[in-house]
Image (cartoon, rainbow, N blue to C red; front, side, top):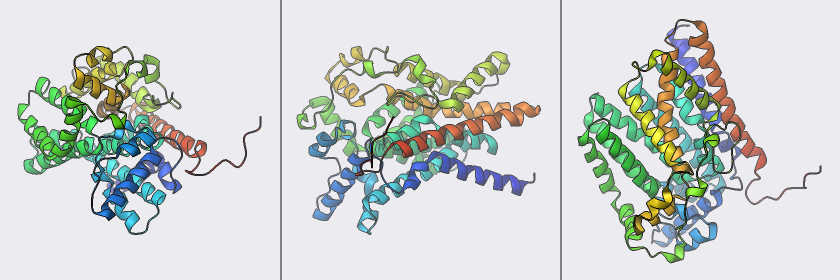
Amino acid sequence: MDKKQKKTLCVILYILIFAFTSAPVFCGYVMEGGDGVMWLSRIREMRESLAGGAVSWFPSPELITAFGGQSAAFDSGIWLLPAIAMQMLGVGEQMSFCIFTGMIGIATMGSAYWMMSSFFENKVTVLYGVLFYMSCPYRIYICFDKADLGQSLVWTLMPLLVGGLVRLRLGRGRKVVWGCISTLAYAGIWYADARWGVIIGGCVGVYLMLWERWFASLFLLAAGAALSMPVIVYLARYLVKGGMQVWNLPLDSIMGKGYTIGFFMTNWTYRPDMPGLGMALAGVFLLMIWMYWSGYGPKMHKTIKGLLTVAGVLTLASLKYFPWDYVQRVGAPFLRFVGLLEAPGVFWMLANILFTIPAAWTIGELRKKQDVLWRWVIPAIFLIAALATALYLCNSLSYMRLPMGQQPVSGLTY
């Protein structure tokens, strides 16, 4: 196979990855369930405020309490402007929502490619990194099952932040450009979902200080936070002073909503709001353990080990046994912030994002073997498993959920 044929095959695979992992986008309607109706109402509310000349950058208490969307109370509406612009140009509400979701999916795949390219030079390894990132069951859950636009944008922006930091760390020229991309990506995360601005900023800052010993990078996070000051002030005012009783923001314990060990390994189906690794990532995880004990430990780069360590700590934080009740007792700000998380699964989501990078490294190392089985057959099995799982999850949602506002023609007869 010559270089042109390889390039054509890669393009075809990237198209298949997007199609298989974004199947609900092509339905042309918003499905019942999840937060889709709330986000449509949020877009409508912001559009009407723009028409009236007073922009409501944050959702109103009436909208939050009507849909039970307390977790989105601090999500800025700045990222909703493309959907609002489409509606002002005459595109229907549901169609604009689908187009906007599709745009997020395309941007996510592009940013994942950019992040993986910063870690790996081999194009096949990058391809598998994008595959694992896009087909991750937690991403599909956030984008289509939960239909949370704020957290969907976090999946888009996180690779930009990581990719920029890696390029800066490796000194690959254009330092100003990479620094600006990382700064803007971190600021964008704050505007997409303020809770994730705190979580990602804390995790990235601690990792860069303790593992990489790279203190200068903290200036980039500080610059991103400075650009996000309107959101930070809005969130900090609630965390420090409280109030906002009209929003009915949660203050409950989140420990009971955490994962147990068995939930991590679920594949095709999962308990409500608790997606697992999926067949492909679970298989790569087991393969990575085998490779490590077979002598690949010294070959593993320091950064890959660091990402695995952080992913492991985040996985522990997502367990129902993690003492979040004691964290909430530290003080009122901790009580309010942990309550906003609603469930420890948010840490499992970040662990999944980070784990896709060591998973891609595993496939890259596997393909260095000359044996046909390890070089071609097993990677092909992982490719099929990832696409099959993603398509199953997406199609299950499409078949099991009615379009918004429609009623079933008749009940099922047994």
